[in-house]
Image 1 (cartoon, rainbow, N blue to C red):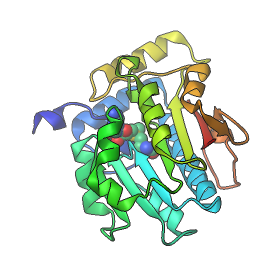
Image 2: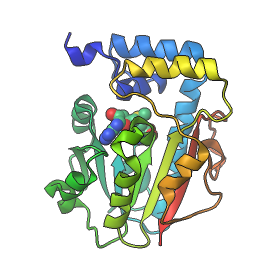
Image 3: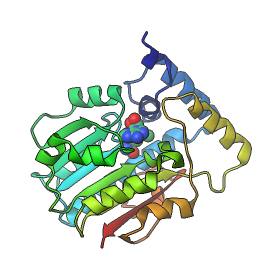
Image 4: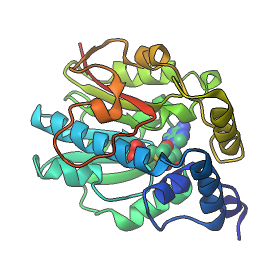
Length: 257
Ligand SMILES: C[S@@+](CC[C@H](N)C(=O)[O-])C[C@H]1O[C@@H](n2cnc3c(N)ncnc32)[C@H](O)[C@@H]1O
């Protein structure tokens, strides 16, 4: 077993919460520890995926044809390209993750049709990512883009200046572009279990940085929030599709002014 397989990995723990099979023993053990403290974590992960599907559908219906999904994770049911292509068959989707295992699985499982690409890249280095020749060949930055930062910013500590990274992405896109984000919060949750939960992630590939509602809202500076604003992900435009009512995260969508 390699060192990478021995260490719980947040992409594969999330895959386990979602009922996926691309995970190793160390991921499952750490995820089970989290589930003992927060038994509804799997439901919350499903709720985040349902939010992703609603957001992507909404953006496609607004006419967006280009999607940049950063921190995309392992392929699962209802991937971005599948949701968007049902509305815009010509849409282009760039999946980015910094985790080599997630990228390897995505390359293996996602279509290689030239309109769906998978890149290894880091949200903490947005300049490098935006300069990537494959990204530039797939996404035209003079046209609107939906940037998806779902359940990823809470893996970027303040020391790595996630606010500057998001601003760099915003400034690289034209007005009419969209930012959609979801972000873990511990607002309203009791202190002891949340400390136990974050301690498990400190041993993983990416420590967890939950943020308050105000801290999450700051990521959307420079964007006009669409209704209903920044809310618990389950409350963002529920569409009648069965979905988990539980969510530990805020979700919001803004349109670049
Ligand atoms: C919880 S998963 C979210 C997957 C998907 N976005 C979703 O919401 O269903 C978080 C993903 O973010 C990735 N990630 C964490 N830090 C990252 C960074 N600095 N740059 C790119 N990806 C990152 C992890 O590898 C993992 O695949």
